[in-house]
Image (tube, rainbow, N blue to C red; front, side):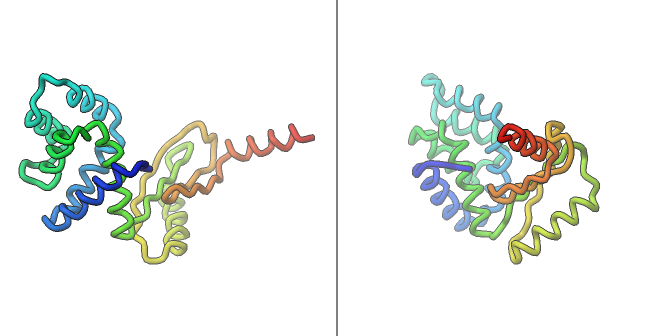
Amino acid sequence: MSDGLIPRRYAKALYKYATENGDAQETYELLKGLSFRHAAIDELKRAVLNPEISDETKGAFMLKLVGSTPGSSLDKFLLLCVRNNRANSLQKISLAYVDLYREKHEIAHVVITSAIPMPDEEAEAILGIVKRRLEAKTLEVEKVIDPELIGGFTVKIDGLVLDASVKRELNDLRLQLLKK
């Protein structure tokens, strides 16, 4: 997740501003997409560190990269980041905003990872259990394929991991054998 005082402060300010302007959810969707696109972040950092590019051009580039519209809360925020030399922290700010938005709107981020594509019935059964445990929270589900699991699955809920994979079981068996 996000870390640092400065990204959290910027995220709080952006959340408050976007909420006042009625585009907090749009900002959330855009930053959620940006926060995990490492190639885009690297490209952004190169442009931001270039002293020959004006702040307005940097802001316009960032806006295009994120996919936001001119005049939006995010547009103004990106220009503020450039002017305050915080554009290189945009990924951490994005992660902090996503965390904050989820917290405020009681959204749980659930990642189901399996070795092969999981049938919908199994995924729904797992999500049913998760939903009962989290009660009022809305679930935002992401399915991931990781062949290294060998079999089984893992479920990650806001950082908490339930590991029912064959890989973990084999690792546990290996550790037991090493103890003997």
